Length: 442
Image (cartoon, rainbow, N blue to C red):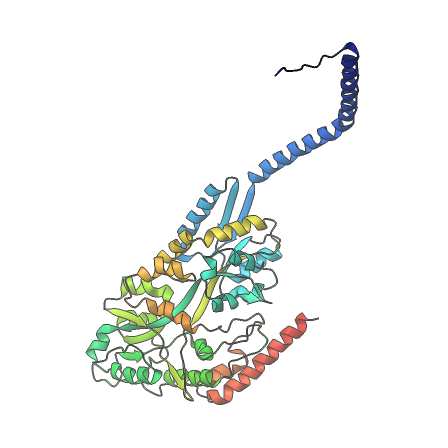
């Protein structure tokens, strides 16, 4: 087969030269027209790059945390975040709770990320919704739905609960043995009172017990023994419940000496009396485990709160409060603040927080990896099992306190029974709540 090669004549060559020349002229004209825009774009890109570089070198994230025995840990976490995010500085401090945060916001220097406990409800209008963070994080989706719900305002999650403070009954196993009492696998308040009668002992026969059976604390807990303090939308007060009324009356009866088993007023707090060996049992918080490990010179353990039987139904609760991370809604560093919150909630950092004690991790996998491996107390699960009876406590956005109006003190001073006082207290609380919502709608 022969390959044919086309031969170009002079006319063909001239034709192509004209085409190339015209194309070059058009390209030159277009370039001259576009050149100013190209220059402006390049300068803008250079400026943006320099600005971004300057910004990256000077970003300061303000973080307010809880302090206490976590200061060293939180500072090390701040430095680690800085290492992972070159150009970012985390400025951390630990103010004395919510008043200082309010001052910082009012003064134009709000935090980007902050720690809040029950004070969460004082900041409902300045916190960023965090629902999207939960939606994309399997770890944060481990947080029990009831706990997430209790951190929602107007249907939006405004606080990311990283830990829960639950209470359990601490008890002195040696005093139990001396009195011939055994802690049952499960128990009721009738059991607790009967056991306390055996545990209360006048060892020197002077007419005054040297060892007491029980001592209560955090009395407001009795107001939500049977149900939440409020509906999920905070529009209705729920404390006027037969189970709550029975719990409040029982607590008052114990404290007022009806059974002769409760430490009298003025003879020290329950933690001091427990550690000193003057008290057989008392409900105390998870955050005090280290106090007993380090200071109790006797064998001890913990168990769930007793069941309360009322009108054929059984109720159980614990004292609950939570700790959460929140983001100021008007932060100018929203993306960075979200990244920092996700960093704080990572499994690695949650295990670190759990390891120093003082809180039940809100995520089940963290509890399994760390908290439930604590060797003392033996029944460490009492603190996590308490979450099965989670109740919304008395904290609320309207600023209502359980002691308002004097009804609460009248019950605990024996002036009137809970059956009379609590319905009146509930009415007063509901009126305050209604006024709160009416003012918000204006």
